[in-house]
Length: 361
Ligand SMILES: Nc1nc2c(ncn2[C@@H]2O[C@H](COP(=O)(O)OP(=O)(O)OP(=O)(O)O)[C@@H](O)[C@H]2O)c(=O)[nH]1
Ligand SMILES: [Mg+2]
Image (cartoon, rainbow, N blue to C red; front, side, top):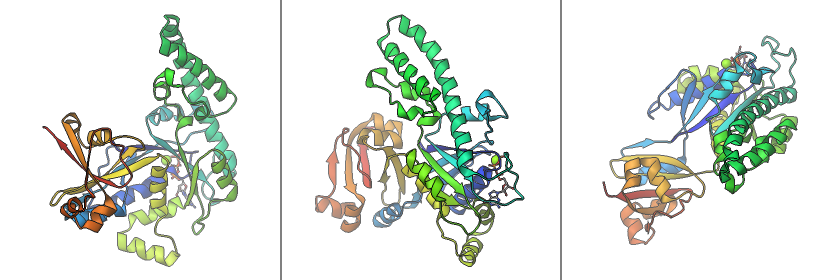
């Protein structure tokens, strides 16, 4: 499944501009299959130079990079968790995402109205973080009411889950994120069932003035304190560039002395939050594809990413590291050198593995 990221921030922070820019990334990669499922979801390819090498080496028919889906939502205002504005409903929409991109305004273009009438990125971050905490608190209390009933019946998991939920509620009441209270093993998938917003990894996208490319140090410091990453982007400029042809955009970037990669940084930054490993599938005259798995998962999980039928009929995996495949000039060479290994379903996938799953249909 493609990874999903929710974009949050105050009204006018630049979320939709960033979203438009990301949609442009998808459009620029028009030779890659992508679709816009919904108007507020951008499916963006995650480019990986290793995939290009693998595709070349085995003479694949085409390149199909894995994708990441960005969900744009309306701006959150103070009180969003209580249903101020449309915030509450939108928060529910991003509960299912794997990570959060938090857009914060740092540009001081006076023509763009700020909901609080001043530009203060740290205060804005606090407003949003407070809303996320409140939203989680409400969710945790609601879940607690339900689980307590099951726990009274003596269910072991439910008892562990209520105890954990109580600690989560206390942490949130003290303004601490849910990620600070990991679920104990005997509470099963309690964390997944709650899916707190404040347990998701966060990438701050600092919306800076055109020509700025540094994250202000106060924000970098805050990000480091909460275990998040931060990148600087001029969202409006990037959105404008996204409307141009690839050549015109490149010429404009050169004129403005802009790095090529600020959006790629967003895509990669979002991806690197998730502790994923990439693996590849490729064959002669077949597509070369990239896929991602949570670190520590196995060949059997990898098979499931590719297709449920392949997972069901899993026999073994032929595995070769992408560099070894490149150095050997293809699968035959890799087999001759002994670089191509046969692995069973419990093999833990390593970043950069090229995998061929043998299965009985
Ligand atoms: N000067 C400047 N203006 C920007 C920048 N990014 C966004 N804007 C402007 O700010 C306004 C709001 O941007 P949006 O991207 O629509 O903001 P949003 O976060 O989606 O706002 P809501 O959907 O209302 O929550 C637009 O007029 C943008 O052109 C920027 O980097 N610099
Ligand atoms: Mg918007």
